[in-house]
View (cartoon, one colour):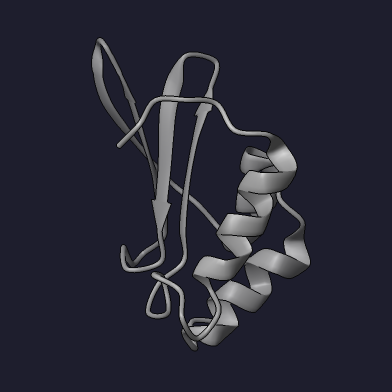
Length: 90
């Protein structure tokens, strides 16, 4: 793991490729993002759906509906729905 910033366009391209046939996440949808100094993680393998938040003080779990993912992570709802449909979750 290398802690070096990449341009947003390059990052988005790499993430989209991860969900193609040759990608790394064919069996799950994974979202990870730092929001207000807390690392938030989502995995479609965790049912019922939840967000896990981590910071120096510990871990927080928040149960959620799938439409909350778009709002929380700033990702297009259609892309999230497509990723979850691929896994036959919704």
